[in-house]
Image (cartoon, rainbow, N blue to C red):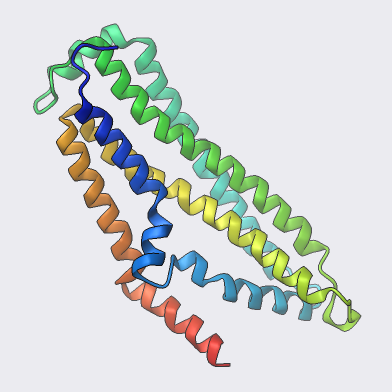
Length: 232
């Protein structure tokens, strides 16, 4: 282990991962849950509209756009991840150049490599999350395509509708988790300055994400939409 590795470095990394993973729990504790969880009812309503439409390509277009978005972020994350891994492979050459930058702490080569791996691990998790999102979206496409028409009076129609909406919700959940990884990857870069700076950046990113989920006009509009569905 690097001789200049401290408990503060480990605490900063642990705090970041806890903040990233506990995002939904914090929203559930201090609010109505994430916007994605609130939209579960909306997705169920969407699936009900699907079985009432006859040969409408609108739903396929929406899902196709979601699949393309997840594929784009997965590809972009892989490219960035490959670039960061190349830094680890050439750590002896990149270490002197980076540590000479203003504000960057002058650490050992070993600790510098660990810091780069720390950033890369966040992007790697995001990448695998995006690929899992793609799988869930493909499952959704299959379930959506097999939904019976409302006129068929299928005995398990309610279960089919709710299950399709649930799988789509899980896909969006994974996608949102991967997107949040970008925010925390940006926060992790502050580990090159100091552990305290990394913790501070993590708090800022967490605050921004919570604000967008709880206090923006968009979040209020989603809540109003869901409330209107509840009253219907």
